[in-house]
Image 1 (cartoon, each protein chain N blue to C red):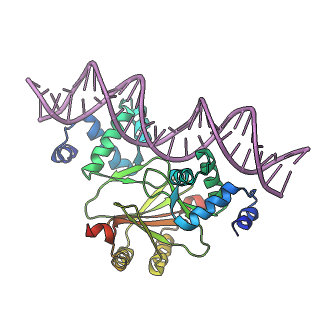
Image 2: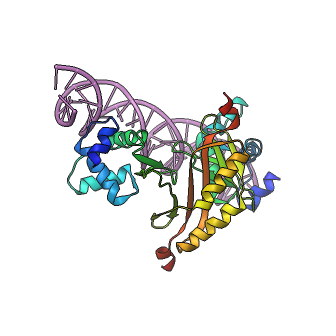
Image 3: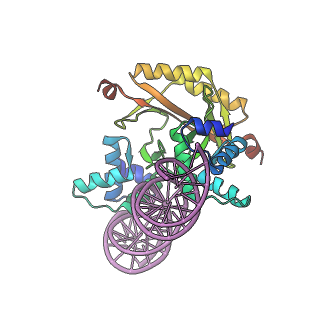
Length: 136
Length: 136
DNA sequence: TTAATTGCAAATGTTTTGCAATGGG
DNA sequence: CCCATTGCAAAACATTTGCAATTAA
C-alpha cells in the first residue's frame, strides 16, 4: 500500500522510500539521524543525503508532517488525513504522546478570527515530564 | 532598570547586555542575526559569538524566552512574569501577534492531567496569513 | 531510453567553543 | 586584582547541493 501512496504522489517507487514509510509506521516520530542509525543497524545502507531528500519530498507531497519541537533536529510523522493532533513531549525521555482536543481547536479559530488572521496550520506542544519519568 | 535585572541575575553589567535588553524592548521578537545586523547598522560592534552567549545566559536566567517557530533561527523575547502568551505567526511577513486565551490554558491542564503528564512549559503557534498580507 | 533517484563529498547556515585580550566590581 | 566577558577564528552540527553513477518506468 505504500507503493500506491508514493506512486500517487508522482514519485518513483524505490525500496528506500517504501522502507522509510514502513519505519514511520512502527516508530511514528523520527528524525533524519534516527532513521539513518536504524537502517545502519539493519545493515541497510542509505545515505543521510537521501534521507533528507526523501523527507522533504514526502513533506511537500503531504505524506509526512515536519515537527520542530526544539532547535535541534526536525522530526517527522505520517500525515493521517482528517486526524490532526497535538503533542505532549517528555523533556526527559523524549517520548511523544499525541492528543486531540476539540475545544482547543475551536477556540483557536476564535482567536484567529478576532485577529483577522487566517490559520493555515498550527502546533500545540506541551513540554513536561511523563508519568514514567516522574516516578523516578 | 535593565542594569538591576542583569545584576540581580548574577551577571556583570556590560553595555552589550543592556543594549540587547533595550533592543528587545522595542522589537519584542529577535533572532541572533537580526540583533547583529541592527547593531551593525547603528555602528555598534558586537560579535555574533557574544550575542549567542548573552542570549543563552539570559535564557538560563529566565530573562528571555526562546522560541523555535521554524527550523531556521531561534527567536527570543523578553520574559514577562505571569504574562504567558501564545503566538500567531504570519508565514508571509513573519509578523508575530501575541495572544492569551484562558480557556485554552485551562484545557491544556485537563489534557495533561488525563495523561498523567506534568507540564513544565508549552507553546501554541498558529501559522497563517495576517490581515495585511491577505489583502494583497 | 531517459528522467528521477542515489551516494559521496563539499558547501551551507546556525550555533558553539578555545583562547588570548579586555573590562567590571 | 581577579574572574567574567568579549572578539576572533575555528569547530561543531544539522541540512543542502553539485555531480557523476545508478535505477525505475
